[in-house]
Length: 279
Ligand SMILES: NC(=O)c1ccc[n+]([C@@H]2O[C@H](COP(=O)([O-])OP(=O)(O)OC[C@H]3O[C@@H](n4cnc5c(N)ncnc54)[C@H](OP(=O)(O)O)[C@@H]3O)[C@@H](O)[C@H]2O)c1
Image (cartoon, rainbow, N blue to C red; front, top):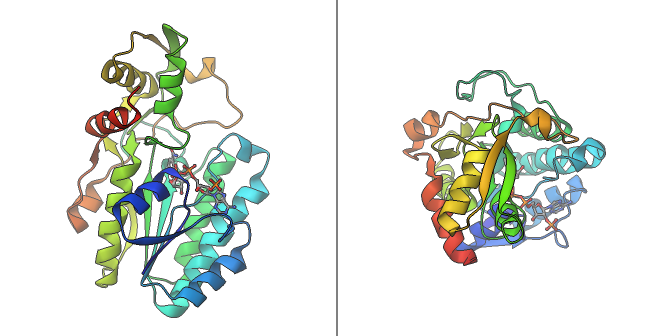
């Protein structure tokens, strides 16, 4: 049995669509209670555990770092500890926000981490707790996740296009939009490899080609047939409680070398999501 923590989120929803998984929502597994998450694994003894739940409210985490830390670090650490005890592989999703966003080169897995906001600090602490727990694991860092469900940039842009014919969008943050469907497919493929005793480790997986939020917005409006003019602005003109990294490019070569998994084609993934939303 593949046990998934998370039920309603973007990646968790796609895992349930694509795989034969047992998904637990907040009512069955509350990540603010690490010991109960570990106990569920000990009780169910699945063949693989995938953690697709997280505290993902990036701005709110600035005020709620202790809660975000429990959900993003203590619970994944406790889950990985339970997996280590039972020799169960543990797969976890992390983020480009562990990096400081400097430079223009795509980040590799061995580059130094230095999160710039509370969410990034808690996600990094989660990675460290998982590595320390000693389970065979995969930490899959991704970025700019979108899908037809949940809260994401694509849905926000489509909603704004109902009432606006011009928007200003940040154009100095660069990254790879990533369809949740492709992240789920990658996790399920990696779960098979891990059951076959692959070594695991930390990997990057995101969409290509790299673009800015403004570039992504233009692609959304073009594909959805919305006539909205997008003017690029610097991040300094769009202040948010949490600082975002300017360079979110993830180098995904290691995943291709070790597992033959290529970066997601976000333009094609966007087409699928827009058809599903049928705006
Ligand atoms: N979204 C992005 O752009 C992005 C970028 C990089 C990395 N990631 C990472 O990718 C992974 C999946 O993200 P996503 O976009 O699929 O997330 P999402 O759509 O925001 O969903 C988060 C999920 O976590 C659950 N959750 C939150 N607090 C919980 C708690 N205390 N107990 C149990 N469940 C809880 C939520 O349940 P409720 O519905 O009950 O709240 C929801 O199912 C996360 O690890 C995230 O850090 C995301």
